[in-house]
Image 1 (spheres, rainbow, N blue to C red):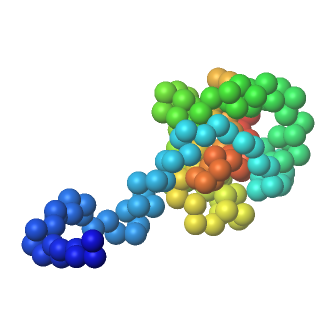
Image 2 (cartoon, rainbow, N blue to C red; image 1 turned 180 degrees about the vertical axis):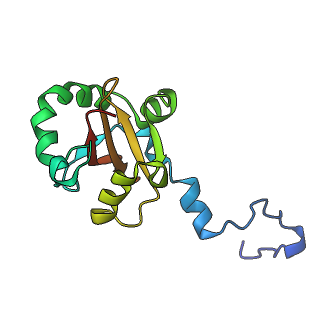
Length: 150
């Protein structure tokens, strides 16, 4: 009963897993939110004025005036997962490198969002785009800019 045989290490099955550096796990899970549906956050939206700044995209005040027209589309997005939005409909909604945005957009983002490499562009109509970032843990979309004339 108490006589257990010790198995020599050479007889144990060898592990087939390889060492995975800690940052590789982060990269592998960086799209884990794809199975989640969007939530909306507005705390980080640009609060500037497009006329004062001489830019074509809008700040919070202008966005909220346009909001009645975009709420229906936001509701439609909420019925989809991020995979459906960003992978299936990738021609309309996709990540964009900040360096590929207009110089005005880069300048404005640089004022209130430092160290952003990419943001997400969501298409609301032929011209209207919402730009923001997605929290990978919750799937929440933080609205940063509204561009009614993209």
